[in-house]
Image (cartoon, each protein chain N blue to C red):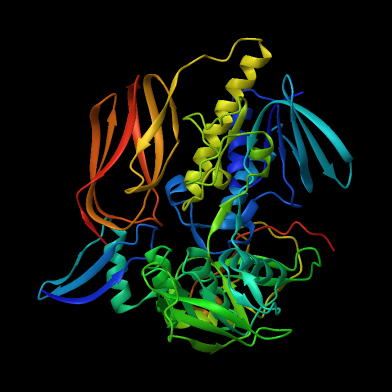
Length: 421
Length: 122
């Protein structure tokens, strides 16, 4: 019987496993790929770890720091292993499949879901047309280039200006492809400003805002796309059709937390984050099931992913220890975190256990660009902190830390003043 | 003071909009939220530099590529020359992260180092 089983061996899972282990748990880490590291293995660019390590590391380096630490511990690791089912009884039983053991069942007191997120595909964003080869999500193109050494296209169009799309615009250019342009349906770029500069402006790759791809042409291989201008509702404007010749379409149109296991376990989900509802321990609505990393909500910084893993790991260890000693889990009332959906896309965690001396890190995304707005937190009816921000935008998640605050009745996040972008 | 250059600092995810000014006394920088932004703005005007991150070929079928980076930023105009040098390399031995893959690439005084480790065997 394990105390804690962690599903997913990327940065979230590795931090969670380490934290639970350091609190004395017997830990199993399960990873479906041949190696740990998750998505960091293919993120060969730098920009990772500034907060955690004080330097800008590449993705593989950041992952290796965790792997090297993990290798020194007694954490059991099963690689190339897939979790096909999980059952709830007195504790939990997971069904695992891998080449060596075939099918095996593992019992555990607590589960940490750290299985990351998926990319949105063309189907989900309704591109019409034929199904020729040459349409890739940015992550798939990144895998092909960085892991397999293939150039997926010679002249491409990128749809979506999120960071992955911007990073791939540069990567493909460096490897000799022509990136005709990046097309973004919104009227502002989705990714970080620094990526617009170092990936597009550095290489004179045009960024076309308020434009989208509406058709893909080509029978066996992409030959061209049709792009159109869109209005504020992102509806294509008649008469603005333009055909762009290309042999590849790279889609960078959003990430969705991977939550089949959370749903199988019956965890309540948050429609805003697309991940489970959690409290400050990162425990879901199912006692003993914890969530962290991109499975919980899509993060911008891997440093925050690692922090969430640490919280989930420590919390799961405490939960497992209570179960092992037949001690009851602390009974406690809780409250929903309130915020106006007109101002915020989401606030996480979404639920707070009441108690004294709470130090909690919240993660917040605003709904639209706001300049010089004030973000305030009210606890039990009184404003306890506020901060003015020169600029708040949806792609840039903000961390709001509460230090040693007693929460007994209610907590609310407010956004006031400021001009909309 | 005349503004000489306005750009986004790329050194960290904050992406401060920095402006380089010049007067008789020399340079000054506004918009930065840390000291590194000052050096960045001056460099960007006088001698822009960039990190290069890429992959090199290996002989290992199970691990066809190894990720690498320049150990420090190199002149922006030399990025494609550094890429050409990187694309000439084939790794044929076990390496750990930090190992030098190209010494003094393009004579720029900067090494290209491994950012991953070779785990495959022939």
